[in-house]
View 1 (cartoon, one colour):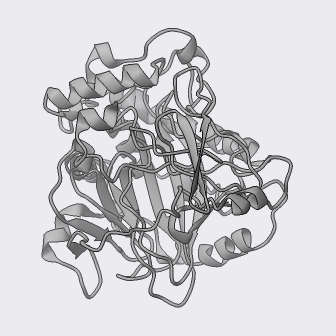
View 2 (spheres, rainbow, N blue to C red):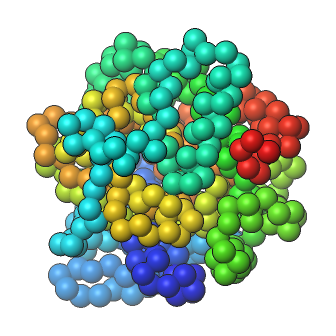
Length: 435
């Protein structure tokens, strides 16, 4: 399997996915998702880890094995289960709850605050002057961000938004997740977090928030991996083996032989695989948007990747903190270079000031660290992805209304994003910044 091909050390912390009832961790790791219980307004479905094509649930020390269904591309699909049945079987989100159990943890360096390290300066790009900058200066900032993203798998866009714009959103986030919302079902996330889909409404659908030109330009330059489009899991697996054995160069994915593969999987991506864009288009599109709450006392998460197939440069996530981040209220920590299978032996905690954005490759190893504070921490996440990427999500993952709102966000953001994609492709600058 893919995990064995990469080596146990390289992928020992790969994402442990949650596709309800299911599953042991897949050899490739699996997505960090859980699926909702249909027909319920407030129910939650708890998942296990995805594994070797079978389902294992542990109840009172007894192992239960059942065949696990897969979609047309060979990826596991979810099985629905009520919270009561999960509790009876002793199931937890991500099999064991998704909390870190290791006692020997990686050393940390911090990007900001009293614990900030000068060594972490290379992971941030100062963006406070973007709105006053000339077009040429704005482009230079975007290229600086792309260079950092390629090198490290994440980049902090420091002070991209004004504090006055972002600060009011924390109260909006608390109200949305803590109050019943018709048609939306929040889901349990690893290590005690909660995730819910956001509605296509103000303030979440504001142009300044989800259509920022700096972010869209970086996305258009960076995302070059179309390997998932039209390929099965096995085909993606062996393509990644070739990527690894050839040196794990990111420009590998720009080679024409790794573009979309024509056929039924390209025309109609199966359940759990992204259906963004069309069979005739390549490059990034808007995926989905969500809100995550990290309550006080939350444990550190296990290191994980949000996706494993088809490797790097296929899904990019923007994290917008709505609660001011400090060293110990649950910010995300990243393993720099892990999207290129590098293991530096330390992790970088991104705790920039309010108004900042952290862009990270979903293939980059990361985790939420422990929350020792006294109040809930909220952050908004929105993703960009290429067609066919397997995440395990379905349109109604966060409730029966979430799919329509997801589609509305896509329609709104894809128009300016695709203009950037056309501009980048027309300039021939997509493969490497400055060329």
